[in-house]
Amino acid sequence: MKNEYSKIFFDTAPIIYFVEQKEKYLTHIKNFLKTNYLSEYYTSTISVAEYSLYPYLYDKSLLSKYNQFIDIIGINVININKNIADKSAQIKSQYRYFKTADSLQLASAMIYNCDLLYKKTTR
Image 1 (cartoon, rainbow, N blue to C red):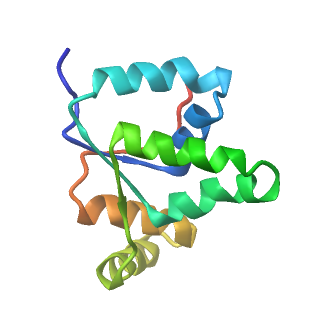
Image 2 (cartoon, one colour; image 1 turned 60 degrees about the vertical axis):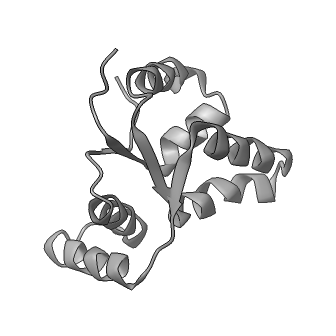
């Protein structure tokens, strides 16, 4: 199998759907990972904050599952810095309807030269 993308940025939703085994999306995500197993994977600390909220509120045992997923898949977690924040502001100045978290995710993917931002898993 040939990889479609060399660098893939994961938004929060696919991480949640995989770790929490959301049946509606699970097959799609597994197939995506199989197809792109040679890719470098990225996400940002925004995703960590977003996917950690539910475990802190309701089920802390999920935190270890998230950490295992990040480690096993080898997802690089990008810290938000001034360059990313500045790129995020540039994005928001052009697309004012973007939420700050979304523009920070996109800016992170752009700064790290990702080929794809994997956001939604709908068919």
